[in-house]
Image 1 (cartoon, rainbow, N blue to C red):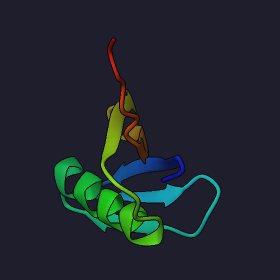
Image 2 (tube, one colour):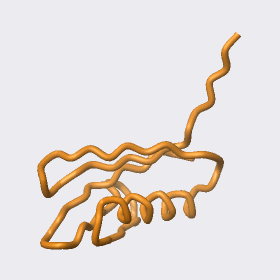
Image 3 (spheres, rainbow, N blue to C red):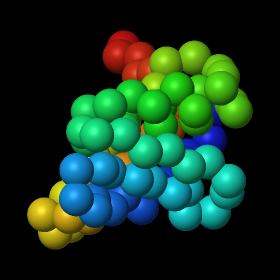
Length: 76
């Protein structure tokens, strides 16, 4: 799975997100639901194993959300 980056904004009681370079968009009433929908949308467009994600607030009404394929690490 590739990396997906979303710009998220809150207006009133609704959070919305747009993919930085691509066509995925979503909205929800909470950041939890927004993240869940974005992970589902990213996985649907490029499903190849487990994912990891990161949600970072920039201001109280904006955030950056990233989803990417989870890399496995092996230890010897």
